[in-house]
Length: 421
Image 1 (cartoon, helix red, strand yellow):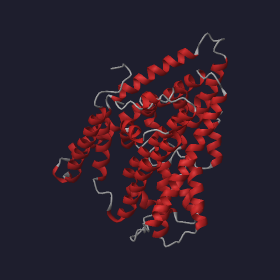
Image 2 (cartoon, rainbow, N blue to C red; image 1 turned 30 degrees about the vertical axis):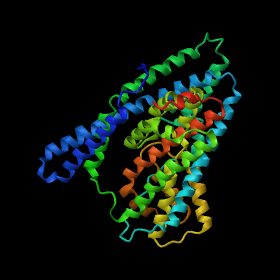
Image 3 (cartoon, rainbow, N blue to C red; image 1 turned 180 degrees about the horizontal axis):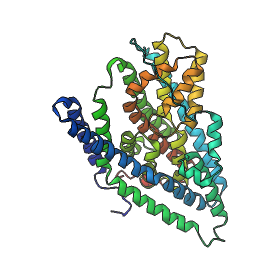
Image 4 (cartoon, rainbow, N blue to C red; image 1 turned 120 degrees about the horizontal axis):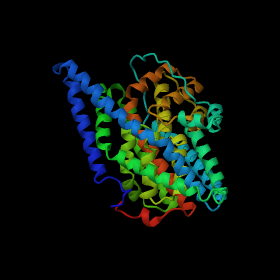
C-alpha cells in the first residue's frame, strides 16, 4: 500500500459510524424523558456536537493550504500557459451548463408531478443577509489584501491569487532555481495530512450524524412529504442520470467506475454538508483514483466548490414552485425562465457552507414576487436535504474534472478504469 493510499475499509467504517451515530442518537432523542438531563446534555454537547465540529474543523484546516499549494504547483508545472485559459473556459462553461440543466430538470419534474404546497400556517422568517449579488461576487475574485483572502476563506479570491502566483512561478522558475518543486513537496505533505484526518472519518461521521438526529429526531417528512421526496428524487436523478450521460457523451468514460470511486467523497460531503470542507478528499480522489492530472484537478475542484451548486439549484427551483403553490400563485413561463437564470447566476456567489442556498433562495423568491416568510417552511427540513445536495455538488465537481481533463489529454484512463479504486 502506498503512503498516500486511503485508509483501508474506509467506506465500510464510515457507513458503520454513520449507522451507529443515527442509532445511538435516536435512542437518546426518543427516550429523553428516561435519561438523566446531565447525561443527555453531556452526550449531546461534548460527544456529538464537539466531536462533529472538531472533525469539520480539521477538514477546513487544510482546505486553504491544500488548494493554494495544489493550484500553484499544478499551474507552475504547465508547459503551455495557453492551456490554462482553455481549462478555465471549459470548466466555468460546464459548471454553468450543468447548473442550468439541474434547475430546469427540477422545474420539469415539479410540473410533471404537480408539486403542491403546504396547507398549514406559515411561520415568519427573517432572511439572513448574504453575498448573493453579482457585483459582490465579482469583487471577491480580486481581493485587495492577499492575506485577508486566506484569513476570510474567500475561495474565489484564493483561487485567483493561486493562479496569479502559479503563473509568475512558472515564468520565473529558472530564476528561482526550481522553486516550483518545493510547492509540489508542500502539496504532497498536505495530501498526507488529509489522509491522516480521513483515518478519523468514521468517528467524525458518527458525531456529525448523531448531532443532527439527537436534536431533530428521524421525522423529516410530515406535511412536507411531497416536497422532500420529490427533491431527493430529482437530486438522485441528476446525480445518476445527468452526470452519467455527460461522462459518457463528452468523455466516453464508464459512469459505474466513476461512482464507485466517488463513494467516499459522497459520504464525506453527506456528513459535512459543505463542499469546501470536502475539497481535500475530492482533490485526493479525483487525482489519485480517477486519474485527472494535477494541473486540471487543482483548478477545477476548488472552482467547483465555489460556483458549482447543482444540488442547490435543484432545491431553489422546487422550493420556489412549492412556495408559489403554498401561497396560491401561478408562475408564468417567463417567471420559470427567470428562476433558471437566477439559479445559474446566484450559484456563483453561494458560499460552500451548510444551508447557504437559503440566502440566494430569498433573492429568487423576491424576484418573482413570492413572500420570504415562506422560507421558514423549507428550513424545517433543509438540514437533511442539504446533506444530499452537497453529495450531488461534489460528484459534479469530479465529473467536470474528468470531462475537462479528457478534452485536454490530461486524464490517465488506465488509472480511471482501474476498478480497484
